[in-house]
Length: 551
Image (cartoon, rainbow, N blue to C red; front, side, top):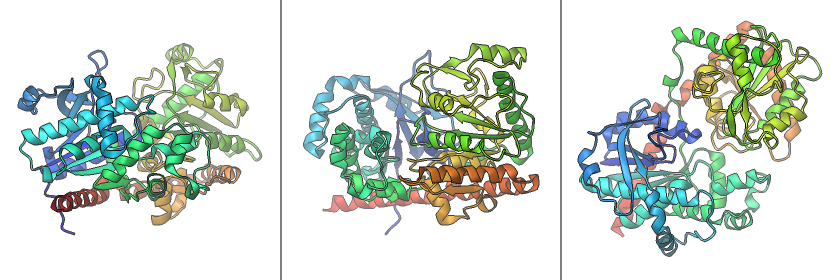
């Protein structure tokens, strides 16, 4: 096939997480942006939602009044769409257009009728955030059309990449209104697959028996599933992030996607000369907060472990992480005291005032409920709080394993740590991501990039990639991949517990080698190499669009 990917007039990528940090998709886009910008310069334009106000501005976006000024001043968005243009404050500083789309709600029914007529998209059963995603995607398509015309770009040399169902309406609208453009649709996790897991149903043992349309009706997901499926079939190139999600998409959306695995940029990681100081500062922060909360004097050789990620109790394996810690504290005592953190943002009510006071006054008296650093608004129904208490973690001086829940975003202004997640990550001795539903899994990749050995599972895309390309051992790659299925929960708990015991018992010299192996493995995931999978997708999309035009 001829390579069209370099001969692109404009490359657009649309996502709800452009300049809007929510989860793993932000990491995908923000980490690959520099590599894409090096290739396409300002032909690369990201489009995100303008959900910000003067009182709450985006910390990731800088408006640049001179950038595309004439277009911004003369663009006619007759249905209440407005834009701001600037730079996304990430490595590469690509052009970003933030779109205000609220005005489109007035004509949503006409738009939904059009998508039904053109693509059979069922919006009748819509609820929740469906209208919001539909309006944003539609507004993004308007921006792409308008900028293509203003910049006099050849529509046949425009690649429009849309991420997740929240942008799928944009792909469908663009397909109808600017059919010469090449379209790419990426599902990072199918909406119906996530819903199956979220409802406690076994996804993997019965995957071949599931029909996506049938399950959507059963789980009241008809509209999102219908939209996502239509975009997957309409796109010139349909992609996902791992083989495990490709199988899921093929079964539930009925089209096999190409796999574009996620890379990483090491510019998030402190250099060799700064790393030791960063690790020391992070460990001091963990121990200081733990002492102020529990009144226990955690010594400097305490083994510090954590899990993190989206607040999905079962999907992210938070349940399995806690059960593994409980088992670790039973039987033969670990060689060192273990301090575990659940770094998972929830419905946070803010930092605990008593803990803030203890930190300011440098007090080490035991506080009430010494398992949480922040309050949560749904204390009685939060599954993590409930499980920590049910398992009997007391965090007292007799505890072999202590567990502390940090239910906030670690953005440097949380009121307790006041350090970002990346600033805290080097202070860990290990991480565990016992995922049940994890299309890729950035958190274990981030962990090894910071030289922290990690445990993940065979149900994570990253775990599958390690099994296919690297040694499944701490010494060989810094990673251990535990087998996890729909029916081996306790065996997986036992395996993770054994892996943790192995790390805790390792002599310092061996730990140093393990951390070096982790860092070396992470270098294999650089976007400078992994971007080739996206360039292939762009090339296939352009070729598909060209062949469609010739018919």
